[in-house]
Image (tube, rainbow, N blue to C red; front, side, top):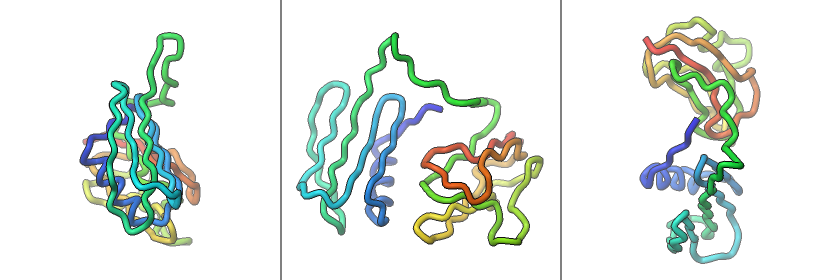
Length: 169
């Protein structure tokens, strides 16, 4: 899976993280790494790119400024990027939009939202991700059929981790 993060998505991510209690955050793609650490006394953040352009940005936040490091990872023929495990382009992958705990049902003892073989519609709740004691319902972005559920109930998940695969209809 290739991770692309444009300028607007970066700002939305930073805004969400700014409103959270997360102290450290790291996001890595094929050609970048974003690392955020809070409560470190600095007044600006630096972003470095593969063209070695240095840029200072100030971030409006209610907490002390945190350094943001975006590093470009150069690819060389001798060190190809690791292969993504079993990515299947014919299926839509539902990924975790945040770090949290994956739950298949609205509460213990209640029926699960979806099973393998379930037909889902866009906007239908398919699972819950608990983050910092908040229950976040994850809704389907497509109409389709659940082909795989890759995470066990009650398991911690990382940002961008594939939770389910859906065959679009």
